[in-house]
Length: 232
Image 1 (cartoon, one colour):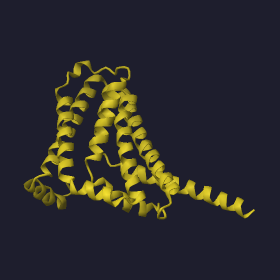
Image 2: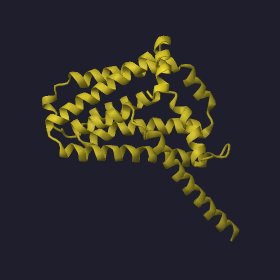
Image 3: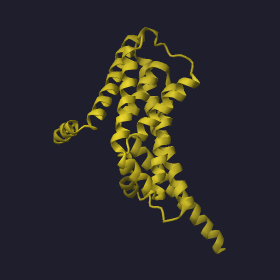
Image 4: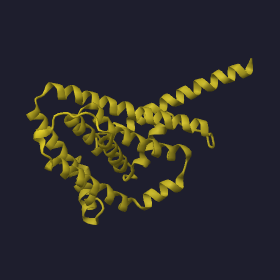
């Protein structure tokens, strides 16, 4: 009898922890940054299925960072933070490439095409790299986990994996919602406006790249620090 009650209690705790992981993953993914803009851009130009690809890449990166936080792998976090400047440099260059590609693309041929496995894989990898090359993301997990009460006992691997899986699901839910809303918007506007929005989103990606690259320099960091009180 006691073992049966204990089993039900453990299952209930696992479900609660899983739900907390979903909430944490959703909160972490929700701020619209470069990956969000990339999802919107791909959905507008290629349809919802292709727009989800960058989101999946970002969700996998979030899951990895969540795993580092859940398992308490401080040596990995320390390594990422020690090489923060080089990783941001790589992420900034990737953003510049994506932004320039979007601006220079011939938008007259932007009719949604059938999903391309190679194209989706490339977008997923790009989004994964963009997220992973921003080691500061890992610093947000511990406060978010604490805020939602997602605390894992030390050396409790099953609980940690439950939390990590929840983070992945929560992140994917956000990207699914974002792409679904963008798809609804795409169906209500004509192709000329989609081209304009596509160019604006490519410009935003390029802007993010410039900001990231500036943040790797002393002068750029001072400018960014000075702009923070102004709300930028």
